[in-house]
Length: 288
Image (cartoon, rainbow, N blue to C red; front, side, top):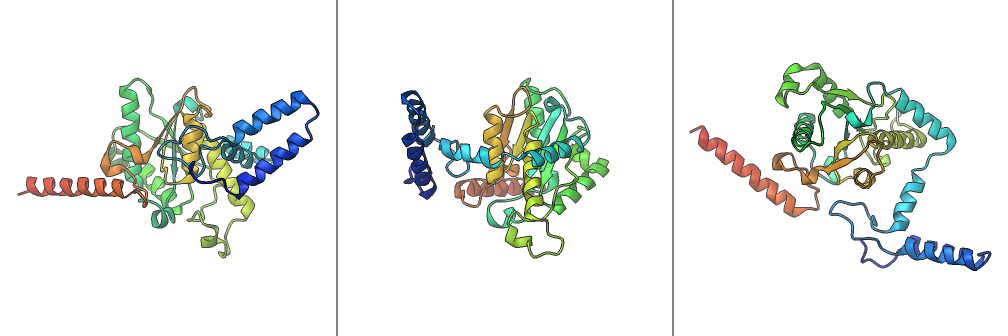
C-alpha cells in the first residue's frame, strides 16, 4: 500500500541509484539520473480499487515489466505459440476471457461456473454494442490453469442448448493448446506430481497467456487475481494490441448475481448475499 514505509527492495534500489549517481560521467548525466531516481521512487496517483500490491509505485511497475521481458529464445517460442493458436486473431474482434479457478476459489475469491462466465461475457458485449463501442460477435480468447474449465468450454461449444441459454451469439474460442494445466496457481500444490510441468514450462505458459490476453479489444477478468489486475492495468493503460482497450473487473459487473467477490471484501459479499436472498424470496412468492 502506498502509505506503508519503503520495504527492503525499495531501499536496495535507492542504494543502487546512489551508486549510479556517484559514477555519473558529468553534470548532464547526473541531472538525468537524479530525475530518474526522483520519478522512479515517488508514489504515483493512488491506484484504482482493483490493483496488485505496490501498483502505484513506478519502480514496482518497472520491475513487473522487466520481469515479464522474455529472452530471445523464449520470445521466439512465445511468438510460435501465438501464431499456432489458430482462428482469427484480429485484436478488434477478440474478447479476452482469462479464468482463474482451482485454488483461487479456496483461498482468495468466489468462482463462477463456465456458463455464468459466458452469461457475463454476453452481457458485457451487448452493453458495448448498445453504446456503440462494439459491433461484432467476437472470438473469445480463453486462458486458464484449470482442466475443469477447459472441459466445460468444450461442452459449451458442443451444445447448442447451452449456448442458447446465454443468448443468440455464436461464440468461437481460441486457446493455447500448449498451456500447462496444473489446476492450481501454487507450485507447492502440484510440484510433486509425476506429470508436473517444469518451472520453465509453467512460466512460459503464464507469459503466453499474458501475451494472448493483451490482444483483445474487450476483456473481463477476476481482479482478485494479481495477474488479472496486471492485465487490467496494462490494457486500460493503452498497452494492448487493439485500437482501444476495455478491461472490466468482474467485481464491478452490474449483474450482482455474476459479480465475483474477493474473500477480503465483506461489503461485496454482504450485498451479493442480500441480492440473492431477495431474488429467492421473489421467486418463492411468484410460485405461490
